[in-house]
Length: 147
Image (cartoon, rainbow, N blue to C red; front, side, top):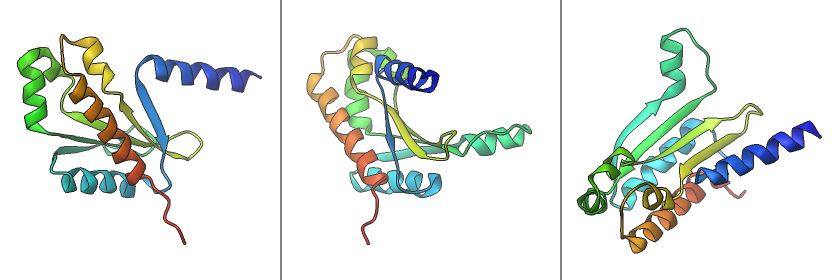
């Protein structure tokens, strides 16, 4: 019962924070590479790949395998920043790929409504476009290959 309660609390906290978590059928490195390739194929720029677990190892700490892909579209980002410069604190976009405590690979990202709720923006079409793109990126990146 405690486990179920904990899972429900965690799920609600993720929804409350506009964080979406999806499972991947591939390992962390493959999933992160898939995201990079998909993002590039859509004409977006990959700005960085941060290997959190490798960084932890450099300071003699352990962390489950974890990589963050940071990417964006300067045209959309600039248009949003022209409305509210502080949106630059939340851009570029990012997807965190990590192995959870059960050994499952997950992909986490913020829903596009996060930007609108934290900044003075009037861009519902851009928000919808971001949401649609992020959902598609993680769906394709973590897709199970059919035999």
